[in-house]
Image 1 (tube, rainbow, N blue to C red):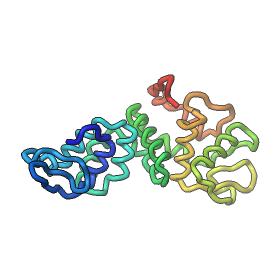
Image 2 (image 1 turned 180 degrees about the vertical axis):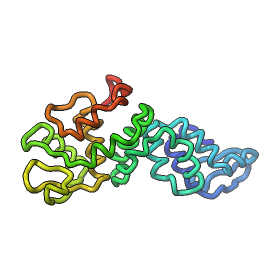
Image 3 (image 1 turned 180 degrees about the horizontal axis):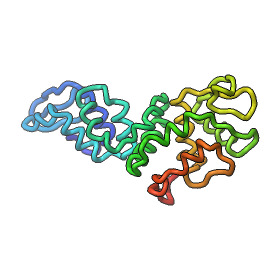
Image 4 (image 1 turned 30 degrees about the vertical axis):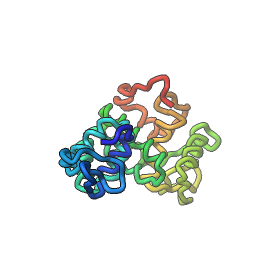
Length: 225
C-alpha cells in the first residue's frame, strides 16, 4: 500500500471502498493512489480486514466519531462499529447528532473516556431530565450561556413548568434533550471543566452529575486542553 497515508483517511475510504482496478502488475482502489501488487489483490477485496488495521492506528476519539457516523454506511461500517462499540458510551451518543464536526469529535472523546471509566447511563437522565434552576448573574448562569453560544443551541422561551432551564421566574428556556445533553457535556468536560472544579450553588441535577463514582476514575494529563 502507499506509504505515508493518514490512517483516519484510509479508514474513511475503506468504510465505503471504491471499485478495485488493475493496472499492469498492480491493483488499486479506483481514483486513489492506494495500490498493491496484483498478487496481493485479495487485500483490497477484504476491506474489513484493512479497516481493522487502520482503526488500530487512529486516535480513539477520532475513531469513535467515524465509526458512529458511518455505522450504517456499509457492511464494513456496521461490522467495524460492532467491533468498537464496547469502548463507546451509548448514554451520551445522542449528542453526536449535532451537525458540527468539532462538537462530534468532542462528544466522541467524552464517550470514550466515560466508557473506559465504566460510567454507565443512569446518571445522564438524572442530570438532564429535571429543570436546571439557576440564579441570574451567577457563575453557573454565565457558564451555561457561554456553552449555549458555543453549541449554537439557543432553545426557545416557554413556561417554567416545562422548561429545561429556569431562572426562578414564570418563564424559562426549552431545549431538545440532545441539545441539553451536549450542554451538560460541555459544562463537565469542555471549557468550564466542572469535572475538575465547579462553581458553588450548582443546580441539584448538575451537582448529581458530579457526585458519581466514575469521576475518580477520570485522569487527565497536564497537557489536556
